[in-house]
Image (cartoon, rainbow over all chains, first blue to last red):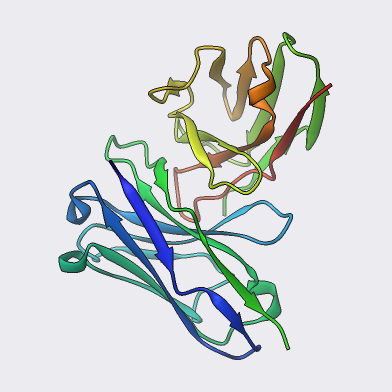
Length: 120
Length: 107
């Protein structure tokens, strides 16, 4: 069974940093690209970042470029999101999502999310 | 960046009704259009990929179609368990933008 489990969320003040983790199981993690998506309270989905299977290609949304860094450790079946210079508007549920391997670039499996709250 | 304009933002329909949600892309996205269903407090769930490919386990009352840069998700006979928010997403180019979402409620 494919599982994605996020961790690392929490409450912090503006300007702080946080590192989110997403640990995968039930599939060959090193063969799949991964994404991070967030959802502010009561709002829609916002794609944040993409990393390919071997970390050679990385993309970011403009809203987080320069502040967030995506990385992965295939030996540990994990993808990470390092978040720096956090702002109140970064408050959201953060999901990792696996990109399907069929060439359609859909997000076929999602974690349950980890909540990040940024407030003074 | 490619913008995805989804409509309506919400709708209320009766059990058995036919419901259609549309998404318009700001430029060509070929067939890189996916649909997700999200229920309150849950992660999104992939319903349809590549415009019209139904994911395993998704009821056949769901279908997807396209006309140029306009895409549609149709529920042929609305069921109580279809109460959710639906999002389109383009996966043609980064950023992999989502539509604003359509909240479907049962009358």
